[in-house]
Image (cartoon, rainbow, N blue to C red):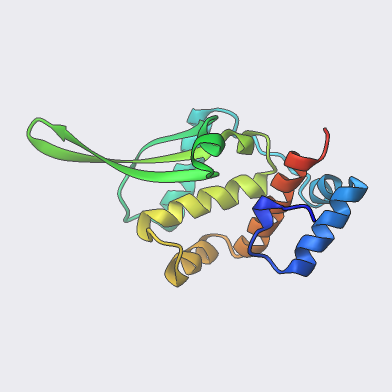
Length: 165
């Protein structure tokens, strides 16, 4: 039985259906048909503006972001699709905190909904460090279809990994 790393933790019937679609070579096509709308966020500056717009809409009172960028090494190095970090630096005898969001470069070419989902996920970490109930409630507040988008994004990544282009 084929292991689908992005679908670990999901019920076996869902994993089995994904395996069947993969075997038929139709998983990627099914996801692309459902999420056909690309996004125009191609570089780090556009990504920063995109994230800042969402942050201003949903998390106005939170700390400002110092850096937002696509990271080509992210998936390979940390086995993550996005990261949120708070970095403290000594600056003139004072501690200066800077928040960074890094998004895996695979999302540069992903459907618009998947970029939004991963950005919402990383923004939620500004308020909630752990993946707990409050974290997912915040994700749902910012993106009502969060859970469906997360599952479909995992199908998309599975198709990218296993199906020839």
